[in-house]
Length: 174
Image (tube, rainbow, N blue to C red; front, side, top):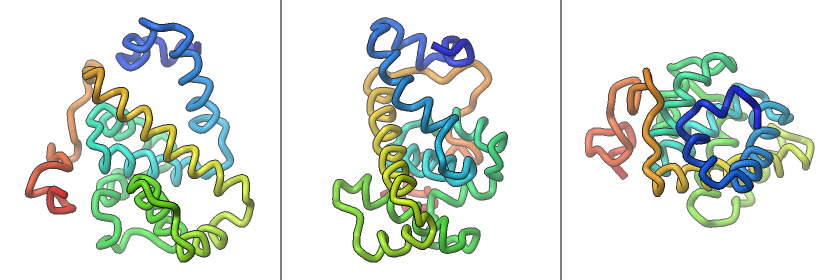
């Protein structure tokens, strides 16, 4: 396992079962560091997954990491209610719609596939997007169920401490 992940609470927790930790790393690491999707777009997807699934760990970790990959904090905050935001163009809207549709348990709609084909003309990139959503959705469930605590120095639900379940959240507390 790469040294940079071993010290995080998620991998300290997962290393209780080293073979599973290796498998999870083998699935997520290529998507995170060697994928073909632009890093900024990838981070928007991860943050949307974290928001929709209620993963405070995933949200807080990527709130810190995403700006290093070119995703401004204003965009990260805007993924909470991306449909009402004017911060995103056609590509971002296509990937965020595909993220939401995938997380809903439904197939990606024909309209969204059409928008994705414009954003990602390569079939492999569209497949990678679905794997990114699914991989981080799986991680979110594991993090929440194992109650993995935030790493030292991280604050929950930045920028404003509002979680997706709060009635005052940008998406109305779903």
